[in-house]
Amino acid sequence: MISYRVSLHNPEAHLFRVSLWIPQPKVAGQIINMPAWIPGSYMIRDFAKSVVTLNASSNGKPVQFKKLDKQRWQFAPVDDGLEIEYEVYAWDLSVRSAHLDTTHGYFNGTSLFFRVEGLSSESCKVEMQRPEGASYNSWQLATTLPVSNCREDGFGEYQAESYEQLIDHPVEIGDFTRGQFEVANTLHKLVISGRHRSDMTRIEKDLGRICKTHIEMFGELPAMDQYLFQVMAVGDGYGGLEHCNSTSLVCKRDDLPYQNQQEMSDGYRQFLGLCSHEYFHLWNVKRIKPEVYRTAELSQEVYTSLLWAFEGITSYYDDLALVRSGVIDEKSYLELLAQTISRVIKGSGRHKQTVSESSFDTWTKFYKQDENAPNAIVSYYAKGALVALALDLTIRKRTGSKCSLDDVMCILWQRFGVTGKGVGERDIEQIACEVAGADMGGFFDLALRSTDDLPLESLLSDMGVVYKQQPASSPKDRGGFADTEQAEKLPGVALGAAFKSDEGGVRLTFVYDDGAAQRSGLASGDLLVAIDGLRANSDNIESLLNCYSVGERLQVTAFRRDELMTFTLAAQRAPADTCYLALSDDQNAARQRCGWLKTASDD
Ligand code: ZN
Image 1 (cartoon, rainbow, N blue to C red):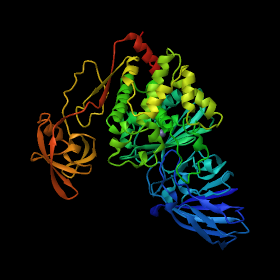
Image 2: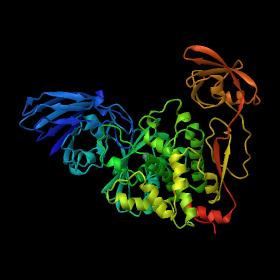
Image 3: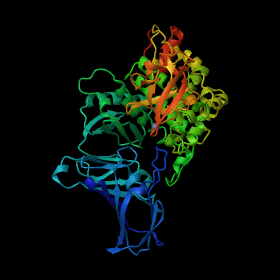
Image 4: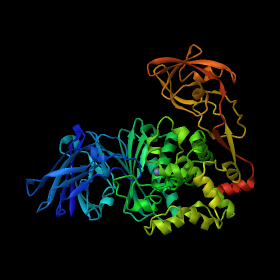
């Protein structure tokens, strides 16, 4: 049996030391490789670049080896077992790789474990060594890797059925806070690392309700001994990655609820949405997965046009489960939905790239976004979530509310998740047609293979939701829920660019197609310092602009690199690119909405 031993060898230098033992290496000379990417994050990251030293021996004698390419090593043939010792530099505090210092250790198997070519379907053993020294006395280890022989604190021996399983259980080591709750007779654990003072009881209660909502929709929780939410709380950060029995998350510590905090802050709502998203992935992508992911070797890019479904449908249900579980109310949900719609309609890239193309090109476009991204691409997360919404409401409409996207997901779970069969490129469309009892070809051609906008206004009106598109009232306006009595704000003058405060001015981060900034010649990265001779900053830029009438000309002074330049900009009305959702008084539609959001009906 192949075995790995992990030691937190030198936390000060951020080095893990791994020892890999191969009892029966290939006769012709064993080859090992390190993954180029981690499932769930579609970018080539070349984890082998963090291997700092590597030595091999057999029977106490050194073994020669050569590097075949950026991620593969080949060892000379040996008569006995082969032992490979290597150090991995770990200084990326994200959910995608590994991090080690004197406060904690975290790693994904894709960053630490070599794949032994030809033997990767064999079971393996992992020994996690406790770091030595009094300062590590309180450290514990949390992972969902199957235990073979462990101490109470989590250090000891683990096992995995295959390499694929080995790399799907990230490991957190340190002095973390623990919480737990039970759903569907399964223990759900929560560990939070990093400095924080959050209300663990409230988080446990809210997560329990959200998990229960997802389980009830699919009818069952996939078989597992336990589930683990692994959270890293930091000053500023956001992200999550799904695994077969766990998830790793990074969040702002301020997003977690403090003791005695009563209200639902925007940050906490976002944190719960992220947890909900990763938990939904337990079914959608970890078990219901594209055919091409089933045999993925992780050595190079793998292409599918289905990320709109695996990320977009997941993004639709993440917030939907918050309202269905009662963690947030209907208005709060519609606010989130309006913000997702606004994110999509603010970028003209949605008219240049379809969600299918966005999925396919994720490796070079979505994951490698530059300053032109809003003008060039569409997010398969945000637009994918709107496709899921439109699909759900269309199925409800065609079946008189007898069926919905929930039924499509349940069939996907039964046919693909339970059986382990891979999802083909058109399987989801076919199941949707089955559930709707109608040909949905036109819907999918529009939603997935065209760049036209979705008919959300009419679909939402069937649910008693009024859709409004209006100019942003300020650069911070992201859209939301509109009370019916709320007066529509007058549109201001727009710069046609996104910006942030920087070095005594405003730094342009995105310059939108056909906006005033682009037409004047301003570019992303320019530092705008004055408008008609008056100093501009992120606090006053809006009031400075609003002194002008549409069509008037103004002189903008900006630095491009270290060169001071002047641009003539024509004041332009802010575009109607911000979505607000309100409730109509249609009682019949309100009943439909209660069925959709699973909120209690008023009557
Ligand atoms: Zn996701």
